[in-house]
Structures are given as C-alpha cells and as structure tokens.
Amino acid sequence: MDDRRVKVREIASAVGISNERVHNILHQHLDMTKLSARWVPRLLTFD
Image (cartoon, rainbow, N blue to C red; front, side, top):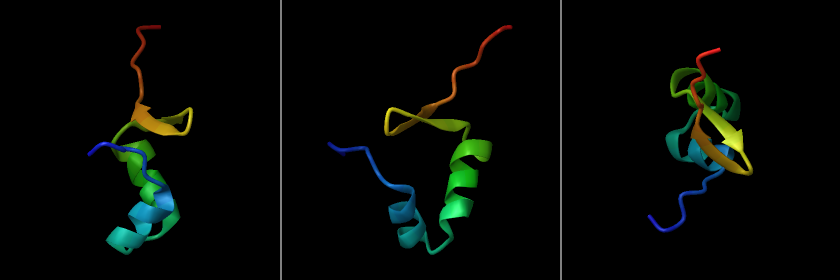
C-alpha cells in the first residue's frame, strides 16, 4: 500500500456501515485519532 490515506466514507462504503460507526470504531476501539488529515495511533502519556 503506497497511499495509506483513506476517507471514513470510503471505509463505510466498502464495509457497508455508517460513517459515524466507522469513526466510532477508529476512535474508541482502535484508539486512533486524526492528525493532519491522517489517522494515527493515540499517544499514551504518563501524566
């Protein structure tokens, strides 16, 4: 995969679920956050 950027709506369309559900899965279950137009794993801090 040369271009790893993908839109939430493209994932939703491919899987057949809503955009909101895809966003929820990425953010809540996979701990991903959108940073500069790219989904990246959320950094853990020891605060």
